[in-house]
Image (cartoon, rainbow, N blue to C red; front, side, top):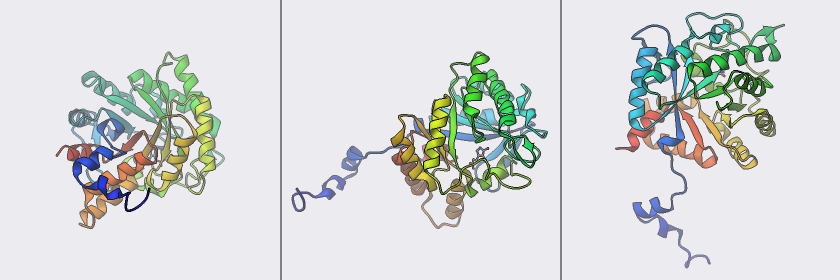
Length: 324
Ligand code: PBG
């Protein structure tokens, strides 16, 4: 059948009809809200390049997550800004490190909030690279050591999920083994599997104070031009024991999300990164776009492409606005 028997506009006639046939819906259950935790008390440093986001001390973070939980969002992702950095990121391998402290404080008052702990060295190294530098480049196998130790410390503090974002080869297997050997065989891993060397991370590096002091991340993060390679990365991570896989960034990589989802029967996470967030904020502050509609359209597109879960700085605002 075709026109005039078929009229696709019939199913667009009223809000109720449109709601009935809507294929994709984004809800609080799909979202993870990221936070940056820093030392001190009563600290709430606005992150200039990410309006509405802050570097929060532990007490402020707890307040913030309480509010978040009341909106219906029960999942967060934590990044740490340490007091001191070192050459290989071992400052993050201690129970006194900033993120383990934050996790313990959160779990004491909000045990039901699911905490995903990002694992990487770039926030903790003086040079800002994601691993230990040997002969001018990040050494893969040496770095696996610190990543494994950091993961165990985070699990011991109470992290519900470990999420390595460093892009070293073999890190999922190394972390899985370290967790299993330390009694955390039931702690899942979300692998940042297809993580691209992207300019969209710019504002995050301000927020986490993690920009590399020399060079770039091109020898470990992926070339934005490649998608076959993304499937190889995902396949490796699954073989090594990843429970969920991630594509990052999201918007310029919707094709990658779609390919990963169709190739593997795995839960797929997409990271709607800082640059994607800040571009929306900047345009909105100029009055150039309808911000709330744009956010909804963006999150819907990421889910429609195949993501089961979306990490986004828009999470709280989106859920609050969808209730109005
Ligand atoms: C750490 C890490 C980064 C992001 C998440 N984890 C930065 C980077 O790789 O440079 C970026 C997140 C964002 O831009 O929102 N490796």
